[in-house]
Image 1 (cartoon, rainbow, N blue to C red):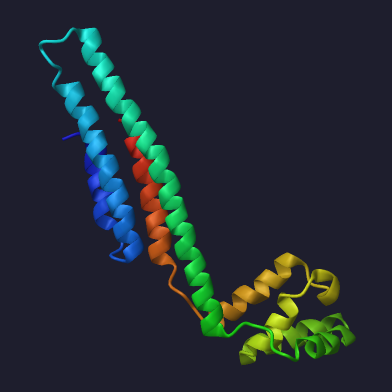
Image 2 (spheres, rainbow, N blue to C red):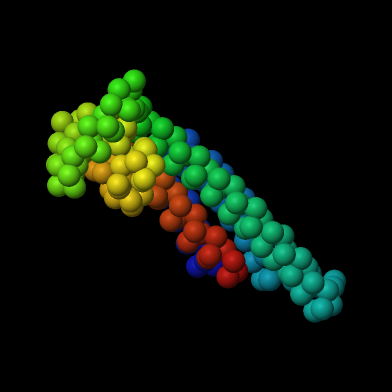
Amino acid sequence: MNPQIKTLESLIARLPGTEAGKQASSHLQEIKMLAEAVEHHRKNPDEMKSEKANSLVVEAARTRLMDAIQKVHVRINALVDAESKALDAQQIRQANLVPDEYAAEIRQVYRSLDESGRLDYLKKAVARGDGAAVAAIVNAPASVTFLTRERADEYRTAFFASHAPVDRAPVDEIRTAADVALRTASTI
């Protein structure tokens, strides 16, 4: 068996057993079948056809494979993006990182502090798990909070890590395995 096809089989077998992993596996199985067809046509030319005709059959099979790789790449990226968004939503719900009816007052107090007081206020809100206070600040425009978008994202990430950790490994595994599988298949 072709080593690239063995690599595809190995990558498919390593996908997580999640629903997204099963969908990705199904898409990659399609790629594997098309790769096997290319390999079959390459190794078993039709004796009734000329060399040129056989090379056209191989090229047509390879074209189908390349078209499928592009389509599967789009599907898997959409699948991974949807899974990532679902994890983000789960994390927000779990962390309760949403501003409440006191968000304006929280920002007013926050803005009244000097720079070190603002940073201390935000660090303490993260540490005590006050999602409403953190959300009121990190979700507001930078002009209101004096925080750059990057800095707000750092506090948001720290809050999630402390109060609502989510296992993103299965999604990362799908993305990595699919990228390697599709690159491997494109070399067949």
